[in-house]
Amino acid sequence: MSNPVGSVTQSQAAVPASDVHAKAPEPRAQPVPTDQVQSSSAAQAALEEATETQAQTAKEASAGDAQARRLLAKQEASKADAAREEAKTTTHVVA
Image (cartoon, rainbow, N blue to C red; front, side, top):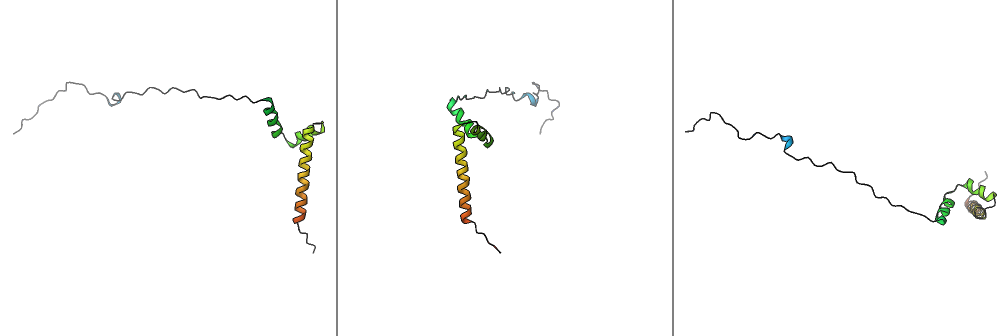
């Protein structure tokens, strides 16, 4: 037969559940690495020429810029060629 247990005393106090796990240290923000690029003046000039607008090219051509004049002449020739090609393939029907 078993003997009934009267009272039980604990020798250690219970640890709260929130203190069981150690808190991780706060993550530090890492600096983002950056690259610096230096382009030559020729590369900068080429970029400006490539990104300028049609109006800017026309303005430069009227001011005597030879490169702008050649570009406008090339564009006009391309338009004329496209118009001739379209005229060859277009059929006009008169009713």
